Length: 94
Image (cartoon, rainbow, N blue to C red; front, side, top):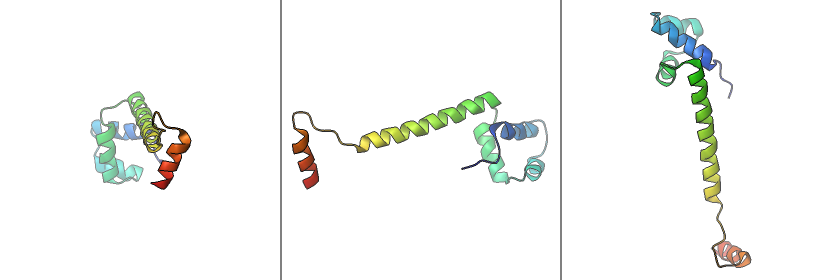
């Protein structure tokens, strides 16, 4: 999914509002909805560019780890003390 705005651009818009510019003017100039602007504000409000980039890295890492955990949880392992062939037959019957 391609995003139209980078973290730097989003934070610049939020800083404009912090400096006194009206949110309505900012969203009109940048052609975004007010809902999007306020969602960005709740997510990136008060962050610097470097902090926002770090947040994105952590979110990506968390997403990858969740996928990894879900994938490994779905792969059954052979119970200890049984042969793999017997275990495969019992799973296939089930």
